[in-house]
Image 1 (cartoon, rainbow, N blue to C red):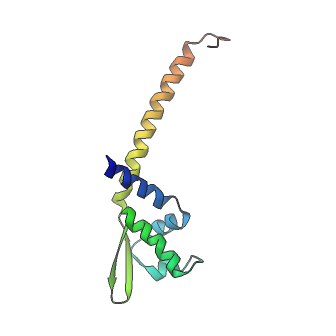
Image 2 (cartoon, rainbow, N blue to C red; image 1 turned 90 degrees about the vertical axis):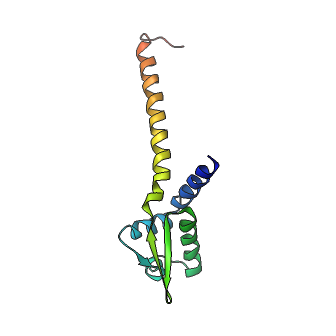
Image 3 (cartoon, rainbow, N blue to C red; image 1 turned 45 degrees about the vertical axis):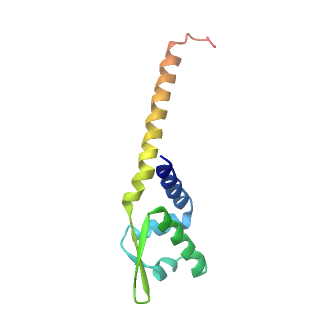
Length: 113
């Protein structure tokens, strides 16, 4: 369980930043070099590379280097960690809301507890 929790924390940490979400969205269109990924952002390359490090640590992307060009790829299957957690929470809250709805329907008009 601790490993799954750490992986989930890493994924949500990575997704918690708009720059990293934009990078993921771009990588979903296909592999891209670091310099092309960084081009739309107004930040120094070392700062941008830190964002890529967070994404790599979370397992959402990986990169390869050929000559002087580092290319990044998305690993969309890692999103399943977050997707599974969200689905579990949705199910739990739907169950709770259904129970609350059933309880409210048992109340008589004007009755409070």
